[in-house]
Image (cartoon, rainbow, N blue to C red; front, side, top):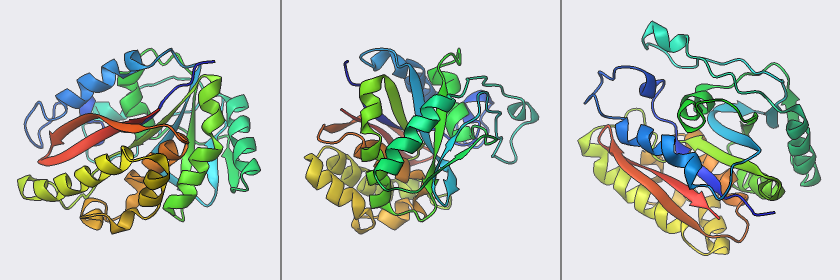
Length: 265
């Protein structure tokens, strides 16, 4: 069977794609939204299911959603009332969740399942654009709360077989995520880190792994990511790429800083 690539995507700011944006130009998120809407059409074939690693869920072990119809978690604050009524009725996939646990267990990585956990906005906000019909099953996979980069690369490597089973692996975060560092004066910092991240993702796989595992030594690393939870989804999907190449597939200037997306394989 043909193999799917893995993706690292930006998921925007809160429910930004589904409201009138007043914290900057009205078209702040338009390019990103248009790109997300077209994303599924760039794949070599339609996936049978999706695994999403969001920067908004951390747990002591790599934990999967195991419910058959996960609810939504509106984990954003101070937005218009209608954004807390958004719907995304994508089904879960308990059998796929069990498969993920089995693969992680074989790699000696701690794993757990949560039958009650819903989809946070790192899942349903971008996927309302990517798959608006909500007609593919989705399993969300947590980050591990150690926030250890190499552990997340290893988790991705453990899940690489899913790519050959028709499952799309998506890391949902932001390549620049400093909540106190938006605006034009932070553009040079974001460009510095984005340049390093782009070169690293495009490096040969052994070098890519080494650099991502030690990402904190990158130029402007902690200025771009004071805390790494929005970067770690990239580690998972890069790990799942095994020996395949990576490349930048989208970039934009949003709220004064550079934000990018990457594909592996």
